Each structure stands twice: as C-alpha cells, then as structure tokens.
Length: 200
Image (cartoon, rainbow, N blue to C red; front, top):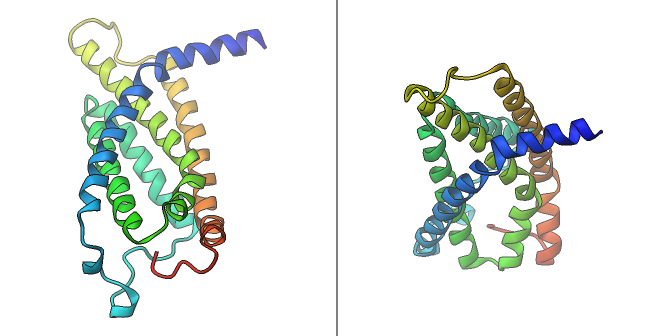
C-alpha cells in the first residue's frame, strides 16, 4: 500500500502539480473571455424552434457525447507532438465555447438552471480535460528540454506508462460524464426550473 501511495504521489508531482494549474489558468481565462463575448450577443437574434430554425444544440446520446469529448481530450493530449501548442489552442477554444454558451444562456434562463445543465457532468468532464492537457503540456515541455540537450531521452517507458494510466482514467471520467449529460442533466435542470426547459 505504501509503495502504491508513493507511486501515486510521484505521478502527481511529475504530471499534475505544475501542469494542471497552467491548463486551468488558460481554460479559466478563455472561459471568462467567452462569457463576456456571449453576454453581448442579442439573445433575440438567435434562432429558435418557433422561428422554424433547427436547434443549434440537438439532443445527443451518450455515445455521441463520449465520442466528441474523447476526441477533444485526444486533441488536448497532442501537445506531445506540438511542443504544447495544440494543447494551449485547444484549451483556449474550449474555454471560449464554454464561456460563450453560458454567457448566452444566462440572458434568458435562471442561472441555477444553467448551473444544473453544466455542473453535474462538468465536475467530471473538466478535470478529465485538464489532466489530458497536463499530459500534453508535460510532453511538450519534455520535448523542449530534449531539443535543448537537457534530457538524454525524449520519453521513457515510465513516461508512456504513466501517461497511459492518466489518459485511461480521464477517458473513464469522460464516458461517465457523457452518460450523466445525456440521461440525467435535462431531468435535473427541469426539476430545478419547475417544468420543461423550452428553448434552453
């Protein structure tokens, strides 16, 4: 048990302690920017079912959501082959989208309902994406160090094994989050709203 705990702590020090806060900072700043942009979008100008326009947010199944978010997670981990650039760009884009959606939604919906639509699956999905980002950022930093001659090897078997475990756990979180989003979120939000969500 003690050796397993020591190994877990070592993984935390190598992969998460530095890189998750960096990823969270990028995602958080982008989310704020997206929220500010979404807040100035006139909600009346958006398409609605009453206007005959298709919903921009069609209902998705667990499989749809899991596949989309697993692809997003994979893209964030690709900092390994882009010196962290793809990871940083992915975090910025995800943050802008999240912030803009929330900024638009709160214009015509109770913030508690918006929270009910986001928080239940977000508490699993966002940490999973941050861990995947940490993997991409660390591999990107290791690549920089290798190019500068500060590392003897680009990656080690230990690096690959630990990254594999982190991505596997993140993938599990993503799948569970997708199930919650597809099967629990709407019912919970409607309970908070006290009725059908209508155009939310």
